[in-house]
Length: 270
Ligand SMILES: O=P(O)(O)OC[C@@H](O)[C@@H](O)c1c[nH]c2ccccc12
Image 1 (cartoon, protein in one colour):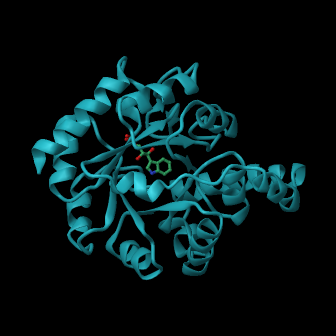
Image 2 (cartoon, rainbow, N blue to C red; image 1 turned 90 degrees about the horizontal axis):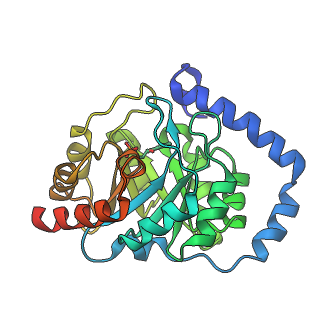
């Protein structure tokens, strides 16, 4: 286990709850049965290709609440929200499935999967291979792997499993050390979360400082704290190939237009 798991941070607390909820699901549906469901799924869509398209890609998130801000929006119809994201030109829809802090669920993931034909990211605190099988069983094409929550051995295992399942991983980093670990284990899609998950503080400058360390041509996602087109232009000018946006989209009355505006802002930044 990573050292961070013993220090009592927000991340540690979230993961504790995730593990408790997970053990109940495993009791209800053992891994062998879950694997049967995966066999019945259509093959995963290519999330890497979707993010590598020319221009800035937007990963638009279905996010009900957050530990730092509480409820963000009353999302009564996650399928309709996801459809509007797709119509605005989102490359990928992210669905938060963590229940205790983010009020997400696999039900939200199912609804979104049925509503759109672009790649879907299951956004959760992945600490067990079971969650990756589960993501695929529910039609997700990508999963989030948070480097701060995983040992090298776990990260390597989980990357291999996503590949085996035809999926992609968004590998989230926040420090140079985490970035180096992600790169040395062969992560293809790197995320830089400007929010520190141990303290929940946002520092947008973290993005530029880590982006500069990456080889040219990397698929690089700027995560968190996108408030407006200016923030998007800022990340794009520092090398983001994609931005991951939650709050600014769920709290907007016209999210499709907002996505179109974000994509245009990046064109001007380069
Ligand atoms: O709502 P925002 O500030 O646009 O952030 C979206 C996304 O980056 C954030 O939800 C996030 C990034 N990494 C995470 C890991 C777990 C849970 C949530 C997250």
